[in-house]
Image 1 (cartoon, rainbow, N blue to C red):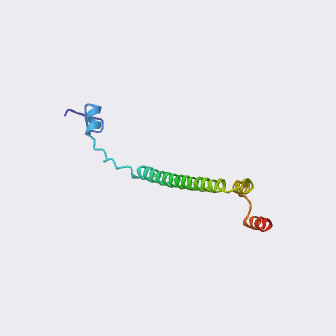
Image 2 (cartoon, rainbow, N blue to C red; image 1 turned 120 degrees about the vertical axis):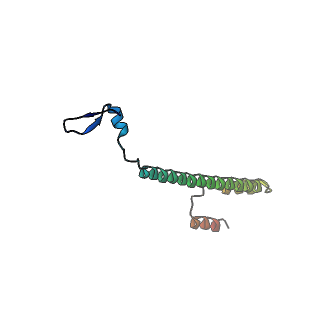
Image 3 (cartoon, rainbow, N blue to C red; image 1 turned 30 degrees about the vertical axis):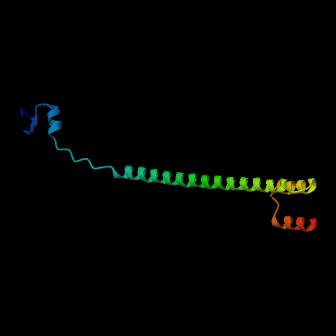
Length: 112
């Protein structure tokens, strides 16, 4: 390889590209921290998605069970003999359920 002498007397390659290519670069170390953070974030997102999807599935199952129970109770009310018992049963079935157990107990006691 052709070399040139500089003012200090050290030899240098004649071409700058050859000098860069000839120099020993330190080996590249793998960047572990960014990959570790990305991996932990991805796993966290997947776990969060799993729990959210599982909760939605449970909620849907509870909703289906509730609708099925309401349909069965409606069918039983429709099977009662007489217009007044049937209407009373349907009214109780479709009443809002936000009353506490104490209020419902008092209402049942007053009906008797």
